[in-house]
Amino acid sequence: MENYISWFLLALILVVLEMVTGTFYMLVIAIALAVGGMMALLGMNLAWQLILRALTVVTGTVVLRHGKSAQTSAASNTSFDIGEPVRVIKWNDNGTARGFYRGAEWDAQLESADKPRDATLYIAEIRGSGLVLTHRKSQQQ
Image 1: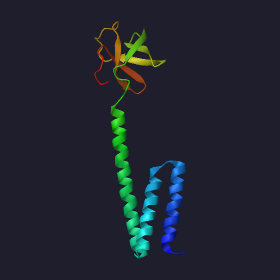
Image 2 (image 1 turned 90 degrees about the vertical axis):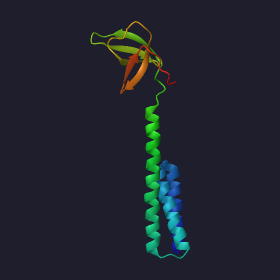
Image 3 (image 1 turned 90 degrees about the horizontal axis):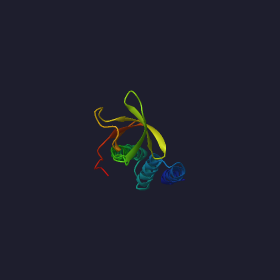
Image 4 (image 1 turned 45 degrees about the vertical axis):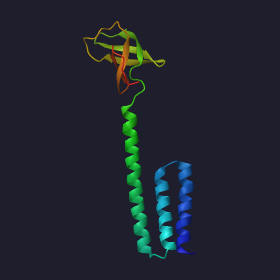
């Protein structure tokens, strides 16, 4: 069997595995194997096939990581909950509260201790599993 056929068969197997697992890293490796197959088809020696395949894997991994980190930071900066009203169920002595939002009870605290407790309160920020409340409705929506 020709060398380039082996490269293309391995690439095809990894494409199928990528479809099963849903990870794009296997797709990067499959593309790199296809690049190795193209180099073998063009008559390059094995050393060049391996070098270009390795460069393709490194480049593809860097591109995937950069794209993933950009998506993650954009998603973490946007919260659809900011500015939504919260019904406070109970105020605790230490200034924290239990609020009702989205069908569940949440721990909450005021953004500033000097804010009135009886006004309608809105979500200013989410810290972990708790809400930070303010009396101003956010314009983020």
